[in-house]
Image (tube, rainbow, N blue to C red; front, side):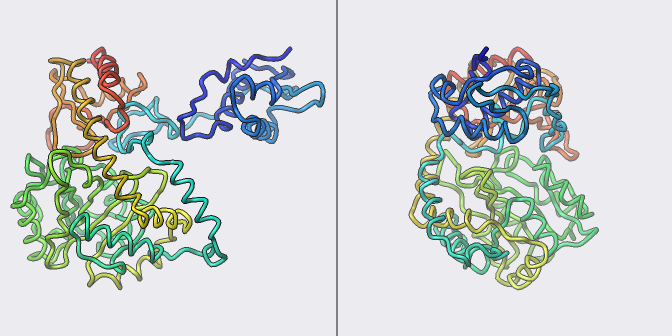
Length: 472
């Protein structure tokens, strides 16, 4: 008897996971849980194609994968069946994934996108078809030399495009030799640490601030100095008081992570003055500086640097998509040789094909247009998210309205543990991060951080807000 394909009713055509993999996974789970038993007949590829409205090749690819793994067997005219004698076995559970700050993520899978998930741009609005066309063109033009080891500093063409973009959009005077392409923020920080820092050096970090930074510093046995943040960003005077001889400071001047405030001009000048006096380095993490909604994006701190003390770190994960795994670092001209030497030792280079596609994307003007579209879209989604959440939560919480960024800070009215609330939200299928997990030592008011970039309407935000309200 042929099994009906009800196990496939949850296929998601908007998912980043290919449809054939979704079919494969659902059959695998049905077998593992005993819903499909050894010897059971499954629909033919043709029947399933008609039932689900898919291309036959999609279904055949899923079946081929299942057969290769031993889950199913083709029996000619007798059809395809679940392999006889196969013992149902639940898939190995993934180790519990933890958020940046360490709060529970019991409901979060690496291949899922949860409501309010932070660090993700609007994936539904990315021009995937355009990217695919550019990718196909780059593949067709590939030469044997393009298949060799990629330059560890990045493709020269991409480095030049990044330098040009930064001069125009962020006010940074630099040339291609100062730009180093990396696989992400972590590799960027590892490169800096190897080139400029050593064990027992002290480094200022914003408090509250991005948790992975302190983890990276701890692994390198570099002393972390928590410097408080207020409405004008990092309190530089307090940093000078706590550790005047610190070797570096890591800051997020455009939109402080996580409070989203901007580092004021007096604080910027004070930070630059301190770095010049102390011969220290300033690491500017401009992770989403393009997204400001009340005025034009602020110039980068690097644009004010006259002493060559600022290293500027940017990423394509927030403006394009995290799966691209490309970021970049702009170093002072005096340090180019040092970084070239270190990158030859610690960097492996990023895939040339991805860099080529990105280079074409920038050269043909798609990158600038995409940022402009996303800036408008995020302004609307931010407005809708705030309105929907405020309507659902009422007096139970307040929302910090910042001039930019990709998330909002939801402050809890009652003395509620933000860590416990985050754990409960994850169990309910909602993403959030606890502000307490982003703090090193400062006493913070309990709050949760919610990304809004993938919230598509005020109605959606209100519906999700009602789910949060029930847990408050």
